[in-house]
Length: 299
Ligand code: AMP
Ligand code: MN
Ligand code: MN
Ligand code: MN
Image (tube, rainbow, N blue to C red; front, side, top):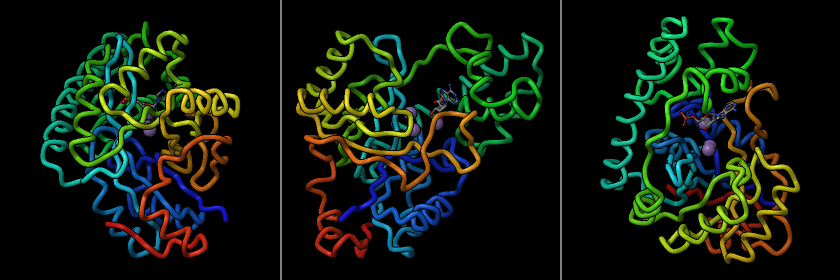
């Protein structure tokens, strides 16, 4: 039995290009049995996704991907099985969105200084108007011919040392893990290979994360090579962290020239010896008991 599980995806509630409805429809068409929506710093799309998942027979896991500044770097912490209605989480995320708004204006100002006018308005116009990410700037700059694809915009304009870079001032690791846990969720370090941490730094991060109550490591994900997955599977085993798996899907039209991604329903299996984070989830047990069909959809 091979149940397709995808625990890291984005919608138009953050920087994805599919609405929560369309995301769920695509997941259903790809025979994904268990799907988490994990938009950056918002729970806005979760109700729509949950309703669509109920209608389509996909088991839905409410999630979020919280932006964190740790040791002068940006780290992403995914929260799974959160209560989307949790008031403290919503208030905390609203605070992050305020910083995002300020940062978006600042990115626009810095790009304008370099002769790129109207980037803030352009990025905002490509967003839902409530959450503006660097991806929206990247898409706008591509439409304006400043670079051939999003990845090139990041490389030349948006990363450290480039004209539109604004140093992150996100949540602390402690805040992110605490908010997720208080909302009933499980905290997972997202795409660990992306941070390019030394072994010492990685062990420090994982140690602090566990100390705070974090439980998971994203072993399989869209931006991981098979070697990355094997490498982080070993860390998960050694650190007694649960293994998660998610595509980090942002939209169907994002070609390889954009950010690394993998389509819904196309994730490789977890490497041997990992303990899946979903092992004890009732929704997954029900599916396994039903022979792999997603007959139960949680709200
Ligand atoms: P933000 O949270 O607004 O700073 O934007 C982070 C998002 O930008 C990530 O979730 C990716 O969707 C996207 N991103 C980051 N780095 C790159 C890159 N090198 N190429 C394309 N997209 C990227
Ligand atoms: Mn993103
Ligand atoms: Mn991320
Ligand atoms: Mn993501």
